[in-house]
Image (cartoon, rainbow, N blue to C red; front, side):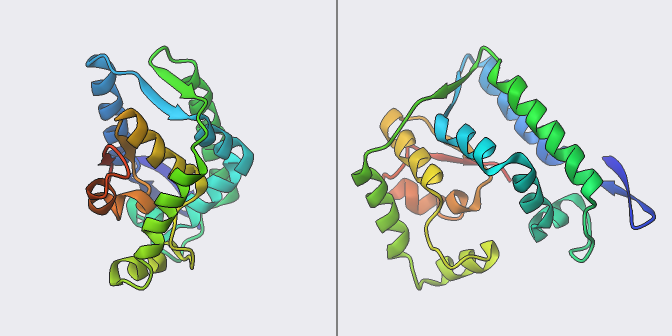
Length: 188
């Protein structure tokens, strides 16, 4: 539990459940001798987009507020957002220095991206896709170029993707079934 003052009252934010699951999973992978890799596009997207903007999107997401135990109408203050952005940047920098973590320079072939995009476009109009788009508040049925590159990297290397990104987790069975990735480990 993390305690913050919001609108003059003390709110206990339940963030440890998610953080602990990620930490436990990471520790298990490292203990078992696995290296953890991500593609350069992921790190570039984080810093190009700006950590503050990513934190803002995270804080404004109704799912986040539900996860941490806040009513949807409550606005998370700029002070808390700034603190989250600083902590996030610090954690990313520390992560990049770990021996077991590696950033891979990877640029997928345009045909591979087209195959993934066509898969998502084929779901356009289905109940599952419409529900997903409403949840994400988007009109675009396919994920970002970086997410599509992660899928192609997974397929090429045989490494699963560990994520909580609903663009991937909402279609886990379909993506795996079509052989568009090696696997998706959904972290709730």
